[in-house]
Structures are given as C-alpha cells and as structure tokens.
Length: 512
Image (cartoon, rainbow, N blue to C red):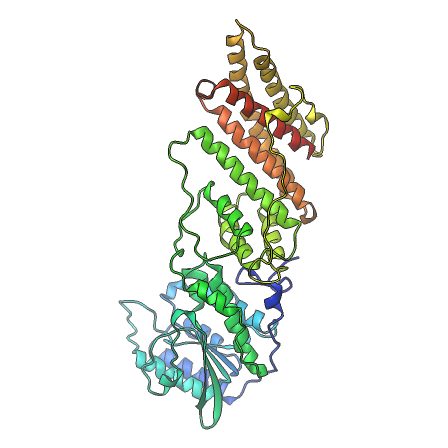
C-alpha cells in the first residue's frame, strides 16, 4: 500500500530517488528545564490576555517539543481558521500549514521526528491578524515572549519561516533577508556561549495555500527542512539542485484557482507528463472560434484519448519522466479535475508511485508515444466486421448492450452503403433510428464499463486505461450523433465516418 511514509511522498507530491537519499536520522534529543519553564511562560502570557483555554493548550502542545530544533511560524489569520476544539493530532491535520510542517519534519528525519517532537512557535503568539482584534496584544510583547522562550530553550537550530521585523532588540539578531525564497544561514551566540544556527526559509502556507498549483514551492521547502535537520548531524550544505527549483519559484503568476474545463484539464495533464516542467506555461488552451459543436466534441475525444495513452505509457515506464511534472499532474490536474473518474484512485496511486521512482525532479530522456495506426473507415474490410464476437471483457451485461449497438450501427451503414435512387428517405430514416437508439445504448454501456473498471487492480491498470479510452470515444461520438439536427447538419460522408468509427471503438472495447 502506498502512503506517505513507505513510498516517499511528502506534501502530497512524490519524492524522486535523488532526494530520498538526502535525509539523515538526527541524534536523540531530550527535554531540559528550559522546555518546561518556557511552557509556563507561554501559558501565563495567554492567560494575561484572556486567550481561550483550548487555544493556549494547543500553543503549548506545539511548543512542547525538545529544544534542539525550533520552527518559527507566523500567526493564523483568524481563530476560526484552526480547529481548536479537536485533539492535537486532528488539530494538526485540519490546518494545512501545520500538516505541512509535520510532513516536512517526518521526511527530513526519516520519520524519527514529527511536529509532536519539535518545538513550533508563533512569532505573534495569540495575536490573530484581524483589523478588529480585541485582545490588543502589542507586537513588542509577542516578540519579548519569543525572546524569553528562545533564551530558555537554547535551540541548536532555528528555522525562521517568516520575514517580519522584530520589535524586541534582542530578537533583531534573528532577522535575515529572505527575498526570492533564498535559504540564508548564520550562526548566533545566545545565552552566554551557546551556538545557534539560524536558517531563513519561507512560510509553508505559501506552498500549500497561496501557490498550491505550483509544486516547486513544496520541493524547495523539502530541501530547506532536510538541510535544517542535517545541521544536527554536522552537515550544513544546501543541495545544489535546490537553486534550480528556487528559480522556478521566483516566476510570478499561476496562483489563481481557475477551474479547468473537460477540454483543458487533460491537455495540461498530458503536457505535464510529456515535457520538462518549467513552472509557468502560458495561458490556458482556448477553443478555436468558429468550430462547430460536433468538431468540439471530436477534438475533446482526441484530447482525452491522448491523456489516457500517456497514462498507459507511464504505467509501463520507470525513472526518466521527472518527478516534478508528475507532481503537477497528480497534485492539481488529476486530483482536482478527475475525482469522478472510475480510475481516480488507481491513477492517483500510479502517479505517486511512478513519481517516487524517478531519478530526479526533471526528465532525463525525451518521451514519445509509440506510433499507432489511426483508426479510420478504411481499416474495415466489411460492414459486418464481427469484432464483438470475441469478448475480452468478462461481463455479459456489457457484451449484450455492446452487441445491440454494433448491430444497430451496422444496419444503418449497410443501408447507406447500398443506397440507390429512391432509397434516400429510407437511408435517412435509418440514420435517425441509429442516432436515437445508439446513444442510449452507449450511455448504458458507459455506466457498466465504469463499474467494471472501478475495482481494477493496479496490475491491470494499463488494460483499464485502454478500456476507459475506448469507452470515452464511444461516449463522445454518441453525444455527436444524438444532436437534434445531426442527420441534417452533417454531410453523408461525415455521418458515415462517425458511425464507422463508433462501431470500431465498440468492437475494440468488447475485445479489450
């Protein structure tokens, strides 16, 4: 079973092999008196300003880890943005920022540590970012509290995940420039001769909230946290690949929540798999002006078909695609736009699994789909091509519906191909009959096919993707011929081609 801890997934994206080798298990860490005294200081501060008990308790839970590593975050926007009424583990899972910190710590320490065993502090404790804040806690008081806790804990490493200025003079030494997501490092002497390594990162909320469609931010945070916890083992070098990822993060845009259409989503998913990830890729695809509704559906069928071809191709490949493009495909394009797809869970697992088997974030080879002969009416040697006589799908229900649709189309094509003078009305009648009956049969078949492949095991995913691709072709062609004026609008040659292709797809589907 694939999960975050045995298949190298962090922040919802797959981790390539080159990054899997970087985390170090840190040495054991133990609590000391400064940890206990700092919790009492935090509690007293909250009570002084009338902060609700559940909010104080969770602040203390976050601050209760050992003192060797301290993560400094910035205040939540509102109290309601956190589920304070839940137990601490659920409280963490319900907040995307805290969930991200937990994920990063687990990855960076080979699961030896988590948010439960690391000190996490707020630079503005108990001071929500509200214009009508009634607590009236001054920034100076918050920063004085932070200074008192840091002096008591004496951390070895501080990961500063915000860039605000401190109003306390002693805290000024913890300010580092952090423009353009640069990872800065310096060493401080606090509480006498105690050495603390200060690292400037950026807020995890940027990666999981503000720019959740840009996986490079998550990648960069992963490098930052791996480097931070490696300090405990005496290693202080940011991996060289982090700079290329940082450059991607500096590109502006693509943070909006625009929904993609059934046309756009598969186009971008295909691009994510086949090309080198480059952050921003321009605007969303625009449908050609003046295209008929029939051409739009035919184009959509080709786009979806190509997406399934690439997913099937990925299922048979291993380590040369690059994890970053796959991360974009699974994190945004697939998970957000294909939740109703019967293969949703299987494809999600495929993308995560294949992503974690890549050598690095970027492709190491150019990929092209194997050349396959395009279906056309010229491939059919007989109008009574008996493809449905060979049943590959072990489903009598699908077989019977499929057979009825093939027979109906074959009858209509036989009349049209044998047309003579005086039979035009009869041919038109059979066209109408086919266009009326066949779409209903296809809809029934599609529902049965979805149920059939929904429980397909991963070992048969390639076959299930091929079946879904063929069923999609059938569905979209059925939508075309069901249009009210289809038999009048479309020329005879195009009607013949549509019905012929539909029959071929039906025959291939039942034989898959």
